[in-house]
Amino acid sequence: MSAYPPIVLNTGARMPALALGGWAGLTEEERTQAKEWFLTALKSGYRHIDTAQIYYTEKSVGNAIRESGIPREELFITTKLPWNHHSRVAESFQKSLENLGTEYIDLYLVHFPQRVFYDETTDFPRNPDGSIKVVNSPTLNDVWADVETLLDTGKVKAIGVSNYSIKTLEELLKTAKVVPAVNQVELHPFLAQSKLLAYCKEKGIAVTAYTPTGYQTVLTDPTIVELAGKYGVSPAQIVLAWHLSRGVAAAPKSANESRQKENLNLPFLQPEDVAKISALDRGQRIANKADERGQVWGLTLEELGW
Ligand SMILES: NC(=O)c1ccc[n+]([C@@H]2O[C@H](COP(=O)([O-])OP(=O)(O)OC[C@H]3O[C@@H](n4cnc5c(N)ncnc54)[C@H](OP(=O)(O)O)[C@@H]3O)[C@@H](O)[C@H]2O)c1
Image 1 (cartoon, rainbow, N blue to C red):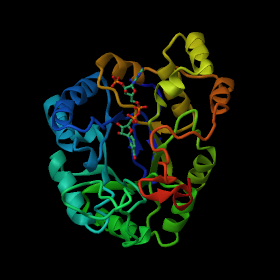
Image 2 (image 1 turned 60 degrees about the vertical axis):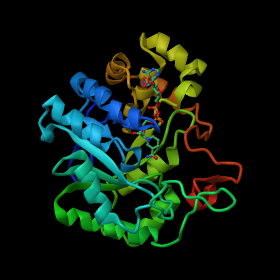
Image 3 (image 1 turned 90 degrees about the vertical axis):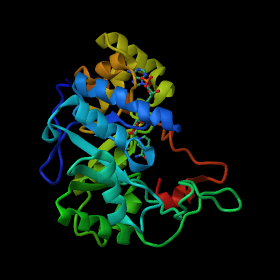
């Protein structure tokens, strides 16, 4: 188990800093089969799983938890409101609870600031020009107000957002009664997000990194490879240790038991090495990149504040 301490949220809850990423692919088979590697992760010591209703792995997470026999209170489960469910928050939240088969969710995130047209046949409705069909209503503020009411049910311990920037957080905070506990964003050495981290720290919002390894794009960087040699660990362990050293939670996905264990066993880095890795920042998105229209899932980088 990683010796890094949990992240204390603005609710007082302790969130394990290293989560297992729960995206498992596009096919029904991959999503069902994911139960097996969620289970190896739980047996290997993971106590935080990051899923989302739109990953279609909530049922597999629930099945793995029950099969593991680990008491629910020892686990931390994050799931997310789909981008096309912004007008149906209570109903969608209930669906996630049923999928997970659990009494409560530890952290519930608004998955994207984009509000996408609801079409029950697809999660990716498109305009005639091929762009994702985003809608302006409800507003970010309306969605957040609906998510806040979930706290009254006692079935969610903390609420937060994902893919929010300083710009969209500022908009949300104009009317928020509850400050988001977490903002989950793409973050790795090539996209160090230092300004967003400083902003979130000031507001009491914890940050979780997705695509935390930066894939082979980052893992083959000469500085990362050199540091892996220095500490006698893998490049992924160096990158994950960098996140935790900065007080950022990370949600690496691995379907492989030995890499799952590797990702939990992280070295402590010297401050100068943390700085060396942060200096690799080049503002490069690897997971959610702009398309040929300059949009990320229907919104421009400017609209997103990215
Ligand atoms: N909020 C959002 O919008 C959002 C967006 C994207 C992702 N996420 C979350 O973040 C999680 C992780 O994101 P991600 O899958 O994009 O990125 P990632 O976890 O950084 O990368 C996953 C890839 O790295 C490999 N890998 C894992 N550990 C490794 C190691 N020690 N050495 C070498 N390769 C390793 C995995 O392969 P193996 O499985 O074969 O080990 C897999 O191909 C997702 O599962 C999801 O929970 C959230």
